[in-house]
Amino acid sequence: MHIFITGASGVIGSHTLRYILGQGHTVTATDIVPLPKDLELPPGSIFVEVDCTDFRAVENAMLQKPCDGVIHLGAIANPRVGSSQCLTRAHITRTVHNVNVTASYNVMRTAADQGIKRIVQASSVNATGLLYSHDSRRKFEELPLTEQSPAHPEDPYNLWSCLALDAAARACLLGLTANESSFLHGHEAFYILHDNLTFGKACREIAEGFYDDATKNGVDPDTVTAKELVQLYYPGTKLREGWWTEGNERRGFYDTSKAKKMLGWYHEK
Image 1 (cartoon, rainbow, N blue to C red):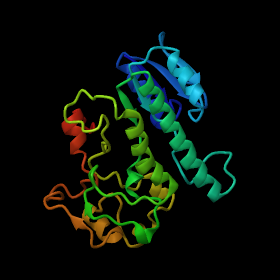
Image 2: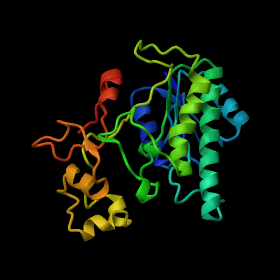
Image 3: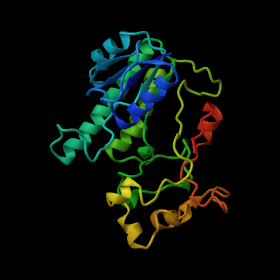
């Protein structure tokens, strides 16, 4: 297949690009910056410098080669950083939201217009209203989270991850018929991430001070159990019976069974 990939120069994008090429597919790789120097495209694949907030630029790039599928990874990934054009915190939040929403709509709309039915849109676990929500309002009805769990986004990044992406998907993809009979709307959300806690001393967020309160309370990131983290950060949250069992104390906060069942996806250990 020939796959259209946005954000191909980023961390996740470049890994995805290498994987797709390794499977024998060709690509139209796009980004606002060049590909990493060590990433060389084979014959049949091309790179196009594209700003996905420019609808015509997205359309022109997607028309350069007939595409069988689209993987959209192009976005401002860190709302605390924004872009080099952001001057203030308020500017950052507006820019993150507007860039990410516009880019997502443009890519999905163009793919739908061209009849492309294999579309992957990356989101974030923060769609539930997680990392960037205020501590006092960071609450969950039940853990682990599923794709049907209520979302409480309040930060512009979380709003993009949750409400805007779903609205764009419904607007652009509702008319597409998924091959899987279990798909309800032509598009489905999936949690695709590690089944177990990746919380440990090597975790970047530890080094950046996100969990200072945990380490100050004597928590060992390499051995702490999921239930202990729930008690520290989300006290009183209902826990699904049988999810955390003996020998499986560091099972993650996200239920990925839907991706396993419908996509056959498993995280490689």
